[in-house]
Image 1 (cartoon, rainbow, N blue to C red):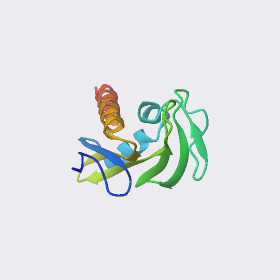
Image 2: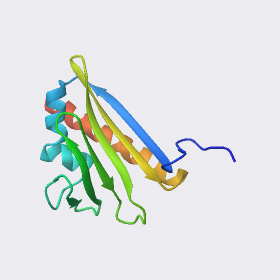
Image 3: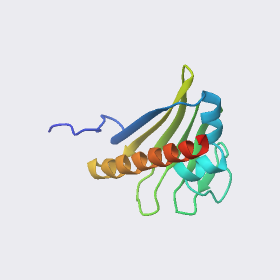
Image 4: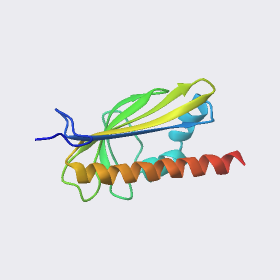
Length: 138
């Protein structure tokens, strides 16, 4: 059987996206974990993000924060409202000279269809982040 795009040997399907922004690493990190940034990429939280604690958004995304390393990354269990499975999402802000990259990586997706769904979802979130940063730069 031929392996499909995004299929891994051990963790089902995965998807990753990264984009470079003309903003400093520190500013990007602070934006991503501000209320405005979190509302874009994660959703309006019902509670604070705390290590080893569950979280839930108003849109029904829920999970558990597994790792949080300030100015590095966050790794969390992540499940959409109508999903039966729990995936893992890792968000990184990466220093790139005077610029910075945002990276979303998701694994433990069930199948190619769920991977396609998340491809569209994370691309939309990147576009929303880009729009918000462009508005703030004006």
